[in-house]
Structures are given as structure tokens and as C-alpha cells.
Image 1 (cartoon, rainbow, N blue to C red):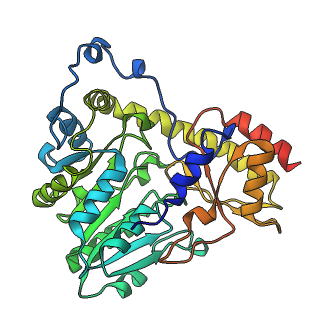
Image 2 (tube, helix red, strand yellow):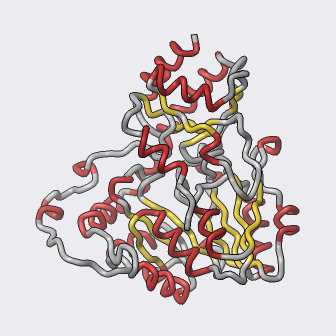
Length: 368
């Protein structure tokens, strides 16, 4: 049995109770009216079943966000979590060894731990700017290593690998002929657009690129995610697993997601500009409270993982913030890992939504 999902349990209790949600992991959303040029498209839509792999129009729009992926190399899912679940079940068996970056989204390590006999953590460390150690990666490889799972821009640190480091990582998995699962849900929100990494699925035949409308596009209510993979046989294995889960997506959600992807460049640029503006506000706040808080500038995505220096500890501080000021942060215990050490003096904050100034004002009052 899978363990309790700490993050989702925490959010189910507090996400809609807190007055100031300053730890949100998604970018600013928008109403349907800003996406649909012709609302009649939605009003006239018949609410029948759609293909399990996703409608062709949606998969064509998704494929257009890659340079070497065709529509039949895309499999649509109900959110990113279902795609992650199906990929891990299709890839792993008890005889396999997997490597997973730490810290991570909990499902990315718990599913391999449940499915295969051996899992190793590849730690991103604060003292190296959360960079990935390629020598450590090489040392973790075994004859039965089947999978490396990574997430960049990283949740929760905001780390983006350099283009050179990304190319070197791909060369390692290519030489080893192992599968690469690349969680790319924050791709497009890099602080510097020149640092945006090419999707793994465009570069390697045994890569699976995970993405979703929820994070960088800011449309979590659609519950539309996907996996792009050059290997059609692997996608077929995943599809057979999806048949036991959602079977197919919502037809209204697919229609809206398709239209949103047609405007994807502008949606991503709007949200990227907002993250850059919000980072200025957070940077100024941390400079004024350097006696209690240590800032590390995230390089992409819309979450950061700064350090709390107070003697009362980050867990107690986050609890007091929530109950006394209505401000929600994620303490680092949510990211505790069975595969590696995650600093216990950190907390996750978000910077992808509008309205940050009001929450910061309350936070300043609390800090005084």
C-alpha cells in the first residue's frame, strides 16, 4: 500500500482555509472567456466519450509544443499525476533499479519504491546551488538500472540545470540505455527564457516528458496532462493502464486545453513576466529579514525553497504563521524523503500568482 501523500493531505486540510496562500505551486489562472474566441464551441459540444489516448486535436496541439514529437507520440491524461502513475507502472518491475532526484514530488519516489526492488536517491544539495552531481549519478548506475527520474525546473527548489549539464545527463542515460522520466511541468517559466531546456522527448528515444496544463499554463481546473515519448510501444503500455483509471478525459476540458495551447506562448509569457515581478517583491522582503530568513534565487518554475534561521524551527514558525496570520507556507517536512536527506530548515513559497503584495503586507506585520 502506498503511504499517505503528505502534500495532498496538508492541502486538503489547509489550502482553502488559509487567507493568504503564499505557497501555491501553480501560476496565475484565467477565466474560460479569455481562452475561447468563440464560446459557442463549448456550448455546442456534445458530452460524449472521447478517445482514451486523447482527442487528435488536443494531441496535435500538444505535439506542436515539441520539435520532434508527432501526435501519435503523445498520450493525454487526467492531470500529471495519472501520467506519472501510468509511466512508473509501465516501466518498472521488481527486478529493476531506479534512480530518483531528491527533493521531489512525493509520488515520483513512492511509486518506484512500491514497484521495484531497489531505488536510489540522487540528491540536489543546497551547498551546490541545488545542482545535480553527474559523478554521483554515474556511481549510482547498476546493471539492472532501468530508470532515471528527474524534475527541472525543480519543485521545490526552482533549480534549472544548465544546457551543458542537461546535455551531459542525456549522454549518460543514452550510453547506459536506461529510460529517462523527465517531469517538465514548469517548463516555460524560467527566469531567463534562454535557459529553457529542450524537452527530453525531443532528444532521446527512451525519454518520457511529462507536462500538464496546471502549472506553467496556470489552468489546474482543466485536469489535463500528458506524456510525450518517441517510443509508441511504451505509450501503448501506459494506455492499457489508463484503461483501469480515468479511461478518458473530460471532453469540455480537452476542448478548452486545446484552445489554450493555441495561445500557449502568450499564456506562458504572461505567467513568466508575473513570476519575475513577484520575485522582486520576495527578494526585497528577504533582504529586510536576513536575520531570520536566507534567500536562494529560484531559476525557474513558480516555487522557491528558502531557509528559516529562527531557533524555534521552521515547523513551528509555519504553524504560527498559519494560525495567527492566516499565511500558508509548506514546511520542509512535506518533502521528507526515504531516498535522501532534505534540509529540515526550509519552507516552500510560491510566486506565480497575482495578489502577492497583500499577503506580504500581512507577513511583514507578523514578522514585526
